[in-house]
Length: 164
Image (tube, rainbow, N blue to C red; front, side):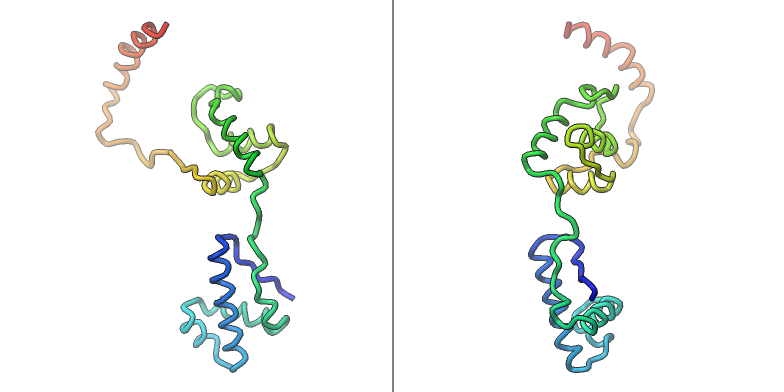
């Protein structure tokens, strides 16, 4: 018997997809064609064909949602600890620059919690908890490389001295 995955998502979304599969099952029982069902439910014919195979092998019960594809492996308490580690900055964890890359967050999770995540898994974990990617898509057209270089040579040393 096939298990029907909802590929994660919210509980409401899972319930919505499960209801679609149950509507399809009623139409399978009436002998409707997959293309007609797909058009009526506004889903792909391939999805309907997959659901029909599952229904043929296991009946309507086989079309039930199996829950999320994967549960978050870090608890909320652990995620709060991870955020505290990230707040310390990359330098506190041995990196010279101040950029948090997904691979670096993956390394911190491995060191701190002894869990292995993929880079995409780290991205999903962070997005699920309200974090977002902050990488500029491109360099600003207005950027003046000479002014940037001059600022680094002239202004920054003065600013650094005034802090000390």
